[in-house]
Amino acid sequence: MTPLEHLGAHRDGILAELIEFAKIPSVSADPDHGDDMARAAEWVAARLRQAGPIEVRTIATGGNPVVYGEWLGAPNAATLLVYGHYDVQPPDPLERWSSDPFAPALRDGRLYGRGVSDNKGPMLIPLKVAQAFFATRGALPLNVKLVFEGEEEIGSRNLEPFVAANTTVLRADMVLAADGAMWRSDEPSVTIACRGVTALELSLTGANRNLHSGRYGGAIANALHAMAELVSSLHTPDGRVAVAGFYDDVAPLPADERRAIAELPFDEARFLSDVGAPAPFGEPGFSTLERQWTRPTLEVNGMWGGYQGKGSQTVTPNEAHAKLSCRLVPDQDPDRIRALVVRHLETHVPAGVTLTVAGERHAARPYRIPADHPGLLTAERVLEQVYRKKPLRVRMGSTLPVSDLFKRLLGIDTVFFSFSTADESFHAPNEFFRVHRLHEGLEAWTRFWESYARSEQ
Image (cartoon, rainbow, N blue to C red):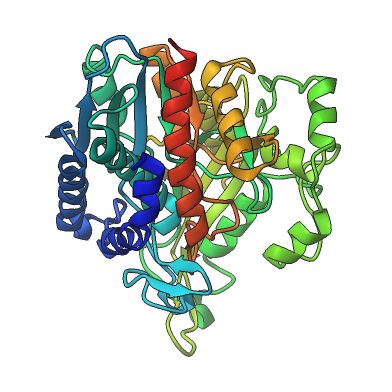
């Protein structure tokens, strides 16, 4: 029996394991889920040990543990560093889910549940592929080191010190990341670049308490009104970021790359329909895909204050809060951009309120893989075998902090090899993972390990 035949014979069991994994509410953003984070790490470590003779360690960090495994039984072969994460986003708002986010449900060939697409389904794939090789051949075709962290959804804040302290242990030829997503479900694709990120939280405070809107309205600043005014100052009416210096370091996109993006099979009307938006919006002078992939952004991720319960409470809020994030492109520095945004906020604070900026550092640089990287070429070759169709080269508007981190600290590039697709509602209610993508991913990872091992000999 071949590894692919073994995987085919265990399709139902692999899906059942994913359902079991996704039942664990490993929400890294919520301290109340600390025990669940530990349980998820234990689950991953146990599955690694079950896969075969892999040396497995659960390594403490300043936050959630890293699960590390390695098999180095192919001394003349290449070494892959496999990356994934076992933490998930909060499921809120719960009322918008069609089923319990932590009771995964199968409907019409899709598995619904928090984390099934980002990243538990994709990261389970290399574990099961390793198990298939050991079960049928007793060995892997190359050396594999596996790193599964529990803080990707909160900015991988403890991964950098972990990698910096273990550069020798983690030495490899390249990273094969189970995280990320393909562009579309109907087009195989490889991602050649992702944007960076920086984020912050801000609060405005006026009076020392909420005040009666009849007695004090019009005489004392309303913190929510002030927040709306401050937030609106961040952009010009046409969608360009109004923060001074924001675009200073943005590298212009070469003409040939703009042409390549324009030639991709992108249906803007379908895109807008899928997300329920009436019209495109954003920085003028660029297409929708260029705005998503190659231009920086500043977004308001949340804004709140005052009375939010049922019925009416006529108050003048004394506090208002907001969360902001920026997606960054070459050559923007996350810390510099954050400082520019803070300076803008400080110089545009409305009268009658004071500003406080907070939030733990959440930053990552943009990343791009060389066009001729052997791992990228292997991924393209394998995807063409699986889908009988040449994959597209695309970019990612979101951020995978590990790509820049591994490049800076280990000197190796990252191939994104996730079998999620961008429409699977990760970070939103009703997240799902197509079951056929799980099995296509199992085939592709198996072929990648074999093909890359041959190409590096």
